[in-house]
Image (cartoon, rainbow, N blue to C red; front, top):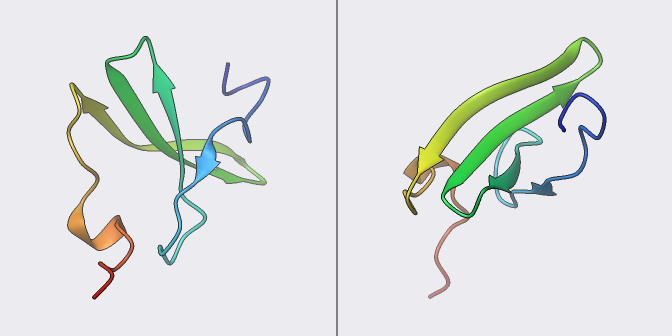
Length: 61
């Protein structure tokens, strides 16, 4: 799917890179970047795991 619709995932706010995430079969989250050269998978998160703390937006006070 990412090869045909690379911008299908939503952009993760609060990151330095235009990181996107998309769910797969309700168990896996794929974090990826879309560049002119192609789609680059950054992380594959299974069973509700969270993105790296550096990739999350800051907590509201």
